[in-house]
Amino acid sequence: MTPDALKYSEEHEWVRMESDGSGVVGITDFAADSLGDVVFVELPEPGAELTQFEKMGEIESVKAVSDLYSPVSGTVMARNESIIDSPELVNDSPFDSGWMVRVTLADAAQLDNLMTYAEYQAMLESQS
Image (cartoon, rainbow, N blue to C red; front, side, top):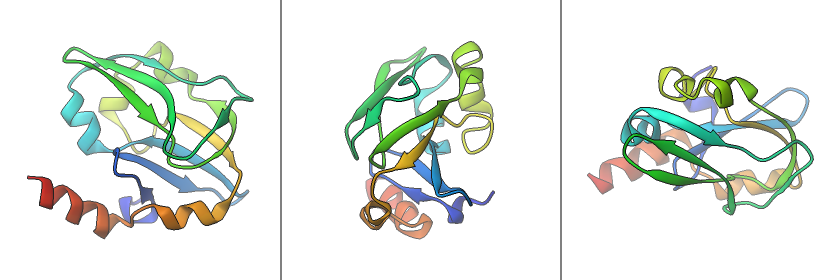
């Protein structure tokens, strides 16, 4: 997986489209680094309905508690139980084993509301 294959939100979440049409959601390495050591993750249960750019859970680090926002609307198919038991996976591998939820998208056109990798990098540079 390469970061340029993903779509990004302004809140530092990403979504990766899978061959079955589902989307896998996580947070970026920038977000994981900014948070510091992640100690707790609260994720929605399978079957939960998510709304694009609305809160879907929380992530707690040694520094702060932050809300997690869904980059797309849809139904949660699965959540990553591994990060609930081992939240440090978010820091260790935010784009792979640190993923959050798998979602059945309500509207694939919502991906157009998200940024490409180049656009996300430009946003980060403009904020520094």
